[in-house]
Length: 65
Length: 139
Image (cartoon, rainbow over all chains, first blue to last red):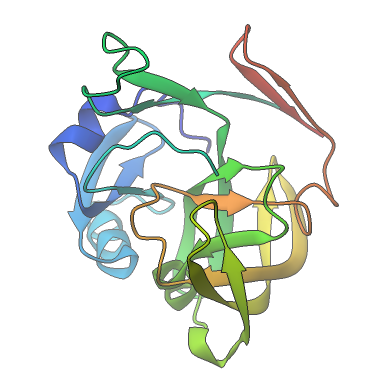
């Protein structure tokens, strides 16, 4: 299932510096953790079998990569 | 398959446009299957990247001994050297599974996403961008 969340603005500001596990069905953050491993475990315990991971950076900078 | 551009926050102090608080980036979801279950991961389509590059902790979640991979020094725009450890892995994009060498780095924690570069991503997919429609086509 593809994540449909298009605007990560509020999530990144609220959870900066952590890994986020998103539920692709509801497009909501269902777990946060310092590592992907813990975020996924938390998501699985809540019944989300295929969470989508992203890392909210500490600072939201302009990127030129 | 079409993917929408995703919106990311930027700092309020951006002097180029102080009223602009978000930017659109061509970030898509890729998917992994592991013995501990599957998960998605957001990654930036970056034609300026020579290889694909993912967070080191994602490599750990894939069951890799990350630092046992082939080490390669790489450089971004700052000229500061960073190290990635390359492993051959499988992941899916738009339902198509590929196997390719991917670098894993512990020095990219300030990136919100992995990087999909020339070798491994552009070598396997035809990609087009339409920012005016906020759509990316990956075939």
